[in-house]
Amino acid sequence: MSHLGRPDGKVVPKLTLKPIAEELSRLLSKPVTFLDQCVGETVEKHCQSPAQGEIILLENLRFHIEEEGSVKDEAGNKTKAKPEDVAKFRASLSKLGDVYVNDAFGTAHRAHSSMVGVDLKVKAAGFLMKKELDFFSKALENPESPFLAIVGGAKVSDKILLIENLLDKVNSMIICGGMAFTFLKVLEKMEIGNSLYDAAGADLVPKLMEKAKAKGVKIYLPCDFITADKTGYATKADGIPAGWMGLDHGSKTNAEFGSVAESSKTILWNGPAGVFEFAKFASGTTALLESCAKSTSKEI
Image 1 (cartoon, helix red, strand yellow):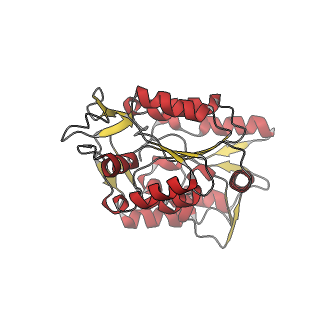
Image 2 (image 1 turned 45 degrees about the vertical axis):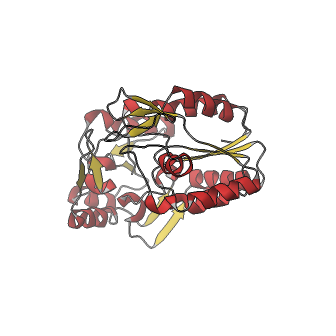
Image 3 (image 1 turned 90 degrees about the horizontal axis):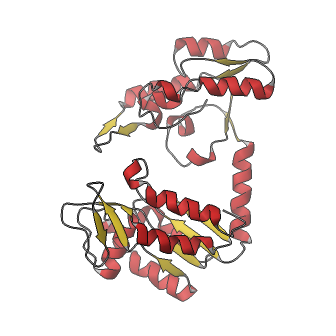
């Protein structure tokens, strides 16, 4: 079972996994059975009595809102799945096999039904998961310098332990995404409008900066921003007007962050630089990713 894209709990034909089944069949030189659902009585019956050696691929898990638990539309309106429907969805997934192997490192941190709701006694990590964990072990235990950490996302308080631990290991750190506004408001008294502000995390900022200074870690923060009307622009000096939100960083920040990334030998990245789910606010994340790809780093 797997997911593809962001169908937001609806059936989106172009995001079906049927072509994946066809490609798997070609690569494995044997038939792959594709089921056009991922839960329910028909799926359960087929998976409980497969032909010997049969390979089965289920339809996109994210066609069901119960997989992610909630979805947002383009206006930011959130719809939550009913708890009883989530429980039913997870119970059905749990009837589809005897052993659960998680090989989805990129979503392993998410509390999605396929990550945390499959109730099987035998559970294991897959080969890709092991490869990623081996890389992290190598990167954190014996990184090549300069070592850059990129930390994005919404809340400082959610990533306090990550930031504190990385400050013991890295040479520089880019703080971006929503959490950057908490740093900028605390450190530079910047007006942030309605941008994300983590009150609990704000109390932690001075302590983190003190540790960074003591460890000789250079901290980089955004200096310009794309604001919520999708065409608005603001700078650190001018601030973000009341009622507006910063949802991505701008071109000047792209240039500065890109220069840092391109000169790094090891890069560890956790969390997006903006609301990348929407194209108008994805340029910061995309530009930073491109800089990492062009970097001299041997480990990303």
